[in-house]
Length: 194
Image 1 (spheres, helix red, strand yellow):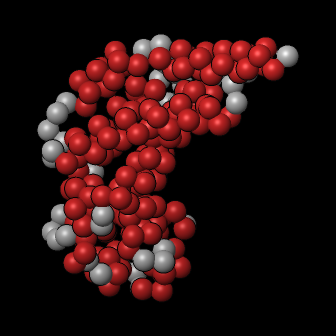
Image 2: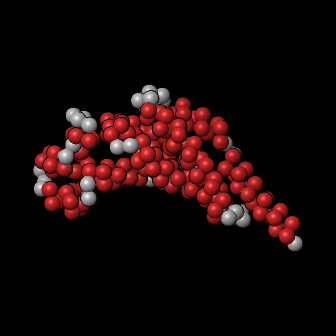
Image 3: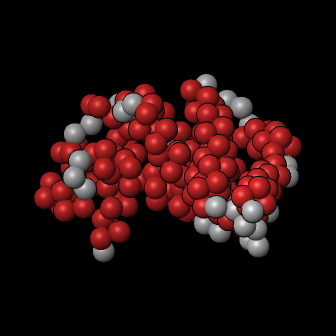
């Protein structure tokens, strides 16, 4: 029942965002549209931004479901683009109303979760420190999020598939190559210390 209520609140928020900006929407507006009382809202969320964050996480969790492997990262990233596109009024409103930083933080978390899965898969049977794997995932995360933020800023006009194809061409084999460099560096360091 809890998830059903949260979904209903999310739908009400998204409906209201078609009519006015996020900073003009009140909790009373959402609960009235949803047909519940304010206490029910506060039982699930501390404020509107908490609802926005939950909505973003839920939408992207669905988009990434099962798409965290090397062979499927392009599909996962394309599904992130498509999820953002399907929620265009919501995302643009949040992007313009909250702060770019909050949208960035959300996208960084989401993209990192996709990329660390890819890095971990490619690092199997390699002696690469966790910190280095995280660094590689972070590096690509910043590039991916930068492209996505630019796409959002430009009203999502470009075809996401073309962006993904360019990314795929650019990084094909690079994650494995980066892991090998860190592994080789570690082996060389060990040999130098002996």
